[in-house]
Length: 428
Image: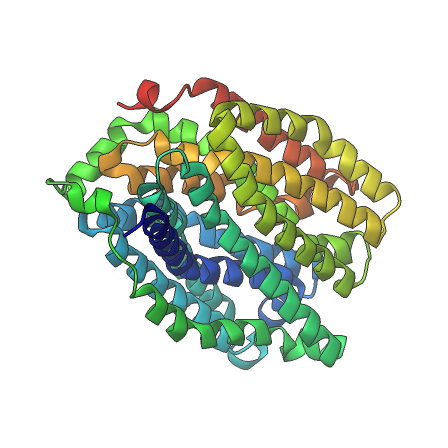
């Protein structure tokens, strides 16, 4: 076999593995995006408290509640993956994710079953959060372990890129449904259509992920630590995990601000049309999909840390001024410009951050430690970004105040980046 043909076969195998492992990652983010996009309609269906702001806040807090289970999922399911293998763990997380999706899609409204409706919705979100706590980490570690030397940033970036397909798909389905149905129909039952589409995809995605092969790195390990030992090793590296969480804060806050919160912000705060806000979100997802692998590849060339520092500094300086410019004269074009600018910053940072986070974690507990760090950032900061932004606007009356939240996240991420020197310096 010629070297060219051998190289082509390796490239095809890598592309197949990336597509398979990313398929379940798509479902996780798709469901979270749909919930964020249709928060006002979900609020009306399940939290009819007689106050629009209170109902929306309850819904956004429910959106965030799913993230509170992520640290639990990171530890328990992450330890399972580190002990039993990447393939088995990723199949398990996809199955749990499917339960949460089905729960929300088929749930009767508050008017039909009373208080059981919001309680069961919260339960569905908690199950999703449990699985999501390790899904991202499991996928990132898998891609990191199959990446050829010098291309880890590019490979790992496809984890985040696959999530952008979910962003685009959810927005596109929302636009199509909105064109066919009236606003009243969308508010009453049309919001369930995107969830139903996710349910239809579940068996297909489960079949696809069954084709996943175990990583050579995991197969080469001669010792598989017990759950107790894995948890002990994660605890021994608590400082590294906390700094890793700080590293991930900017990614999670920016991502949920420019995707899940954009439709609510555009329609409820800026008073733009729902279709305009969803169109902006679709453009953001498409831009992220293109930029993330490029930024991952760039970090392979110039190094993770310089790229992280530069992106965090730009975010720190531009967060509030950009949002103030948008809030001064809201329009579709201004929302698009600001969101695409934030998307570029997010991609530059995330393209280096995820690979860096896999590199600094001890190999024996890489999935659990990575997932815990990322889940803490999401649970404490990113997942509640829509709720925090809504509350800050209500508290201050300043429609640009979410930009200050972005800058605060960038400051914390910058401090964490400066505290981390690289894989060899940080392993316990």
